Image (cartoon, rainbow, N blue to C red; front, side):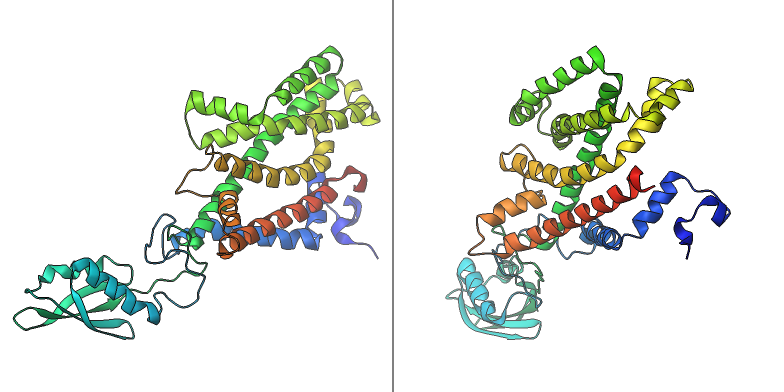
Length: 375
C-alpha cells in the first residue's frame, strides 16, 4: 500500500520540494511534535504570563520572606494577630483586641494619650491589611476601634529571600534564557556555518589561514573576552549575545568545515561546478543544505550550553543583574538554599529541564527530517 504523504510526484499529481518532504517527515515524528507543542506552551507561559500574574517580578513583600508555595492566599490565620501586633509596636500603641472574619478585621488600640487617627496609615503600609479606617473612638480618643480588609496575596510558587513572587520571576527568567539561548545560537549558526563552509570548500591556503584564526580565538579565555567587552562598552544586556556569539561559532565552524571537506568530493558538487556555478552558488545551493542534519542537532545541544554560559556570567556579575533574573541565575540562588527552601531550586530547574528535553527531541526530529540519506 502506497503512503500518499511521501509518494512520488507522479503518484500524487503534484511536485514537492525537498523542504516539503522534510516537513512531512518531521510532522510524522510524534516525539518531536509533542516536544514542539510543550515548548510553545512554555514559551507562551513565559511571554504572555506576566500580563496575568498577580505581581511584578520586582515587587517585594517584606512580610512574606521565603514563604512556601500555596494554593490558598496569604496571610494565614495564625499570622494575622502577629502582624497586627507588629503594627501596634511600630505605632507605639497597645493592641487590646483583634478579630478576623473572612476578608475583614477589627482591631482595638489604646494609649495613655488621645490617639491620632493618622496612625492607621501604619496598617495600610503592611502587606497583610488595607483600607483601615477608624470605626469608633472611646475614652476621649484614647481607645480606637479600627476596621479594614485583609489583603490576600497568592504565591503559587512561593517567594525568595527578598519576598519576591517566584512565579513572575520564573516567567521573566524564561524570557531571558530562551532569548539568549536562541538568538546567540542563531548568531553562532550563521557565522559558523558560513565560515566553516567557505573554509572547507575552498581549501588550500585560504583554509589554512581561516583555521589558524579560529585556533587563535579559541585560545583566548572566554571570561577575558567578556571583561574586555564590559570595560570598553559598559554593562549592557546585548553584551551577553556578543560575548557568547563571539565564542560559540568556533565549534560550529570546525564541525561544518569537516563535513564540507567530505561533501566537496561528491559527484553532485562536481556536476554543479561543471554546469558553471560559482563557488558561492555551490556552497549556498548544495553544501549548506546537506549540512543541515548535523548542524541542527548540534545547534540543539548548544542552546542548553549557552543558557549555562549565561548563568555563569550572571554569577560573576557580568550577565543579568538584579532585580532581573534568568533560569540559570534562579537555579544558582536556589542551589544555595536547596535544603531549607527547596522550591527555589525545584521550579526553575523543572522549567529548564523540560525545555532542554524538548529541544533535544526537536533536534532529533529535524536531523532525521533533513538527513539527505533518507530522501
